[in-house]
Image (cartoon, rainbow, N blue to C red; front, side, top):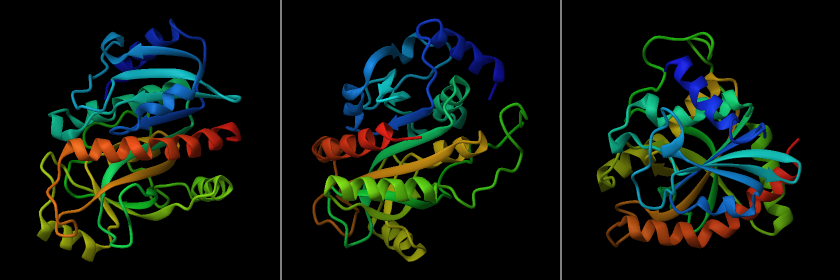
Amino acid sequence: MRYEQVMESVAYIRSLTRKQPSVGIILGSGLGGLVDVLQDKTVISYADIPHFPQSTVPGHAGNLVIGSIGTTIVAAMQGRFHYYEGFTMDEVTYGVYVMRLLGAGSLIVTNACGGVNRSFTPGDLMLISDYISFMAPNPLIGHNDERFGPRFPDMTEAYSRRLIAKAEDTAAALGFRLQKGVYALFSGPCFETAAEIRAYAALGADVVGMSTVPETIVAHYLGMEVLGISCITNMATGIAEKKHSHEAVLQIANEASDKLCALVQRMLETWS
């Protein structure tokens, strides 16, 4: 990752808004509706930001939206980049670098995923407690620029226990319960086989998806506190009887979006 390129992106964004975000958010498939509750917002197309990749997947609008919820200033990525689209890992995680250098010290990363834990139901929201990753390259492979972070970042607490507790308390106040579990990364773009899902279950995975882990790794590298929230949009292969489709994933994600937005909005209102 070139520090100078990231700073060029940051300089362009700062030329459009003086707001300095304290929280970054990455919104997964069908979950981009959170930007509707942002106040006094600036919407910037990824296509206009120097060096910024561009989303190609349906359900990802492709905008960086900077605005406020209560007193918290937020930078929200309305759409992410996936390794399966042909992006390099630098491109997949580019937005995290930009949000950090804009000032964000925390990252909320969301996704649509498949349920492996048989007690889960499509439409559930799950707090990510940890991850399993061996299906895609680590985004930190290559030359390390110490201006970003250390060569060997610690991942003992990949997802903040403090923020997990805050999310659980917030959900309880809103009258619903959150699941909690381990997210396994699968490179995609094909959905997993039944045998792969059995293997993931044996390893301790509760859900499986095609994103989130690279952004989490880079956020920790950059010194950010991370909260991960998964929307279970379908039960994984071999658990569900019907075949998968991205259209069905988007439908369930859109249905669960109101609950996710309510949770994140309430958390951001009392973030500090």
